[in-house]
Image (cartoon, rainbow over all chains, first blue to last red; front, top):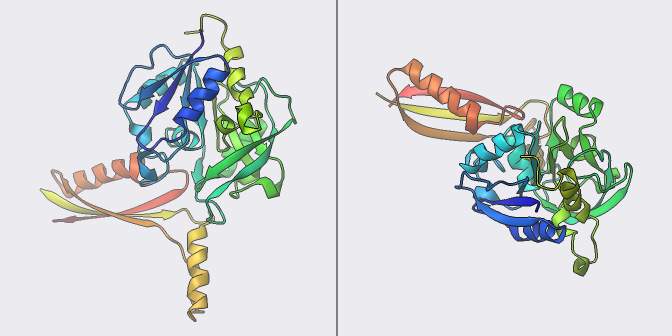
Length: 228
Length: 83
């Protein structure tokens, strides 16, 4: 069975949402505490949203040095799947597993509302369930979501097709992110990070399952029995 | 020897600093119309045991590179003094 490790840092608060979304998609999902160093043979590592370490210094800056992150680094380098949502995306950028950084929202407000995204790349471990150009809707909830990178990095992301999802219109861009970028991936598409919350749009009870595809995609990305 | 380290971290020039903009607007509203280019960073101080000032500076620089500043968005300045 596909195994999904949901990492819990002090201050994570979407860990249950992510665990349930992964389970709904059919994964054997379980928590791993940030001080653990064993991912327990995970096929995918899921870094949830929240405010790890109170967002002290910079969002994700301290979580990035938690003991578990060395295991996450090794997992990613070995081609293992990693998804970072919101604070999880910030941690991945701070850890250097994804390029760029997430800065204070341009309008300083904490953005908490549904936005429309356009799927730009479907050849990733987490977006194969979608079509290129598909419009999907899910909530954002963050204060530090303005994606920023130097000009060369932004060009490379565009040239190599590493922009995974984009805010569909300028009005959907809640934070002033460069090129309306909402989520990116590494070169191979195995590590994905995004600010919007697919985990909060993965349960029919909530009236929107547009995000469930992120979790069903990961199961399709690993053949039965895993790739480890 | 113990040294006193002062690190000043600032958002990189050219990057949008919405906090600085908001404070500038507030200063103008208070009548300080001459205020311009307000930028907001952070100041970090700590004591550091090291063999020499050079050693302390090198260690503090490593701390900035690894944790205290984000190389993508921030620049830092260091001041190291004998405590």
